[in-house]
Image (tube, rainbow over all chains, first blue to last red; front, side, top):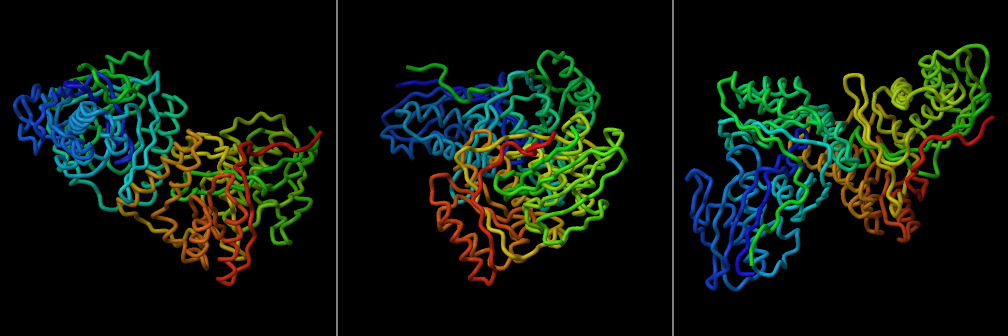
Length: 312
Length: 312
């Protein structure tokens, strides 16, 4: 291939209780990287669209180009690439924007140079790229963006352990993203260093049950397990109106609601067939009552993950 | 029915990282309760076999009779029952002996009086009965003994959340039970009250991956996730030779190895087709080198759970 367009979806890190372990890809929001092969080595950013001029065009500071460069290095590729990044995931919003950018860039590089990198190595390259920008090495968002659906990930001794669980056909996700930037570093700074034993057991149980819910395609069980005793209590104070938004979502019929990744986006889980718009409107109104404008997205689970959407 | 014989399997609490959340029923070891209906209310213990005379025959102190009485109460049963308990699960061994006894008693009572109790209530009665004797309310063993296979359980706000995951056909379990009694209270006393954040994440990830391994019937993933950073480090010192036994199991080909429940039994996970006897012998030898005799059981996962094995 000489050119390729790759789409990578937004994702919900943690999915409530599963801090740094669970990630879930969603539809309707994603980044695109358009890449063109060139003879000279390296990765250049030709343009970034949709970022309001806020992202660095220095290829050493952008997750898409960093991931692409890491993939080229692992492939031992002869030649390099020029990329145009089209940001569709808002940032910093807790929706895995840097992960979507990294995965779109990494997958584009792999496809341009023969699609030869094993999936594990591709994930590693993308996760390293995200870490270079966000400051922490965690695959919850990159694995979800790369593989789609719900992904369990763990990294130790230089290796990933992964499980891909796909979607739940009758579960819908409602996202409320306020105009309130929350840098990952800030949301990590409030985390406790130790966890009470009973909260550890509670979060572990709910995380295990979310995995079971995806295995059994059980939307009700999924929603009932969005119960985070550790991270949400620490981060909720950072998001103006969080308690009101959560109460509004649950009051309008959502099965569960928590903070997406590091925030400030809030996600709710609902069963399809419910008036999903009404849940979104209730969340938007609750943010508004707390002085914040917000954007609502009614999503499905993206079960496909990163994919070529053009090229030749 | 006028009489019934009910079998309930032994089980591995925690399955390594999943403290108080995961349980796994195994074949080859189980309790039997033989029950006969009577007109007068209450539950009497006629005999207990296989316990070496160590268990109380006072029905207020035995898990089988307590569970049976709680079931009768919930059913509003007219009449009572006489039971004979046949202990097949050693105690205190970390193999869910009190849970197997409770579940066999509770299920026997339910079957004698029309099999009308919803599964959730049956589990609650059996778990309360186990708690009355062991001192802690946890369904990891009772849920596994009742339902079979791997079960995720969580109890909050008076309700269970449960997921039944069945077995993994090509996984085998090797149990080594030393002649070293470990009361549940003693093994609970050494547990930490708080947990470092990174250990919480590690245990949660491995627990979530074990659930995924059962969903995908993946013995290799299952074995690779027997990695407990929280409870095993606290309890290993209580079991003479634990490190040697674990090293011996892994050295002989086991995929993973940890403490079963509160101990002192140690379980290893292996793939069928391996020389399972050799893993068992290596574990037995390692205990022996530490001055302890032990019994080895090569088991499958019991996917059926508690069941009637006779009656009329």
